[in-house]
Length: 431
Picture 1: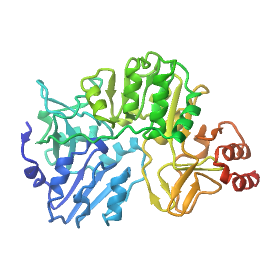
Picture 2: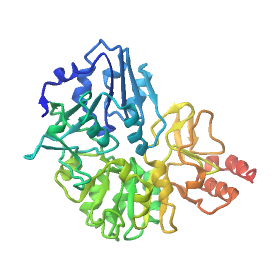
Picture 3: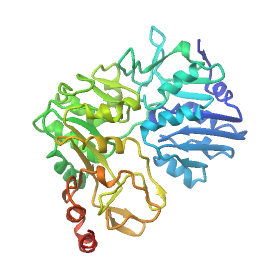
Picture 4: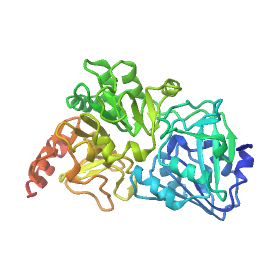
């Protein structure tokens, strides 16, 4: 049976030399992490996690090493502050294996307060740590610490296999918190995002199963779907967003044609507005499953007419997608990018859309996101042979089934006009 204690008492349970894991993004126990940041006695604390949603002082302390599988703004800020942060190249599904291999002594998560049966919903995050939480609970040498928060929505899994909860009897320590959940604003789309979304809309037929990534373009696409005709859509997405909620509210989501988990939208975590969190509370239309289930290639492939909508930092003329590291800067992570891009293009009526603005603003001025060659120290997130469609505000480049030169020329046509001449010259040399 779990014992309840203050966040300060819980922080004292972590040894000066220790190992700990936190879930990605909304699953991380924020109050507990801030309390750990008040300590100054760390000798060798290793923390495994990803996509921090706050700039925690803990990771600036001497003796603390943070191993991240996905960078966000907080990781980038902390690196600039001199924090000991290192990136682990792995897609989201492989976080499960990494957590098992790391086997941290202290496993943490957020959850809702227990219901009348003692079950605490894992709320906004199932992700990659569910199995390791249960393994740690069965090991008397390890600690399972849960930060409970009544402001979190009580979301659902698919029992009995995927309960999306922990029972109080499995947990060692419960820490009460009343922090507001992280809010990801639903901003007004730009003209560029609207143009990209209009191109993407042409690929979405009635009855499609949709996967959308984070960002303005996917949000604008689903907003268009909510406003226009059509419907009978399914949702099978790593991340559930405010835009997908609005698509549900428009009556356009039925999940009736899906081949997997029919009748319900599927996700492994959610980020969005307070309206989204209130709507998710107790809502049986959306189910949260572990990432190794949601992002499994065979699971994605079973769905009807999958259309995946994801972003990128850049693409070269060969069709190689850069979505996480460009130049010498780790910008984000691999996540489920490759899983959905690859599997959404396996069947002829499945489509995978990489959507991005044609240019980016840098310290040296405006640069093209369509590149003749990738810069040094840049990593390819998704290889050329898996890429189906690239969309910018200037149009659509269909790459599937085209030769190298045809692909290059198609990409030139969706680049910004200011850069097309030099890109066209580079494309002419491709054989």
